[in-house]
Length: 189
View 1 (cartoon, rainbow, N blue to C red):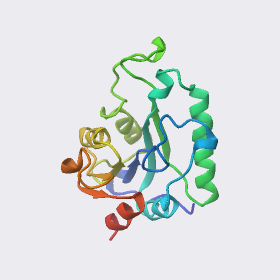
View 2: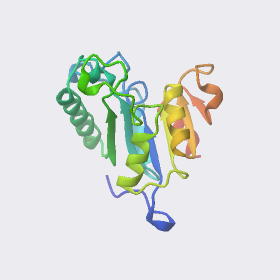
View 3: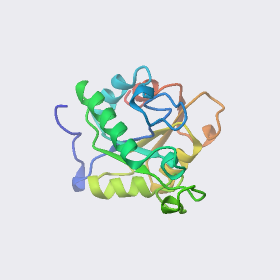
View 4: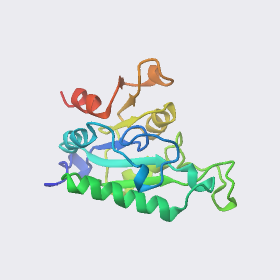
């Protein structure tokens, strides 16, 4: 991609925080194998639009790790695949953050009630510090109310729901869109 979004006063830049499953790719439940990973229609175009003014940051709960359905290595492999798919289309992520924890995890090493698991704001706050992001000027797109609550708790300026109208959390959203592309077009008008 040709350059990062411009930095604002104070050296901070806005971000587009994006949930993964259900926003970027089909949510088939605990997606962890490359053969099961499919980007949703319009996602590449949406990311290109958003990247004009925002750093692209994926924030995703991955409780399948805590449940023992797949490993950190499986997640890393799929994340590398996602980044390669996007790079081939000229789209670069500024960051990709995941939470492997769950308070009722089958695997003791991942059993905890942490602040990084959405609706906690931990992943977003960590990204803001590490990547120099302006949270108030940023947006978040997620397909669950827990995504919106994480964005609000972190101080993200606008939080959008990618879902059908009437979905849980719609009342708290700054907008509800059927796809990330619809959201990106509306936000950048």
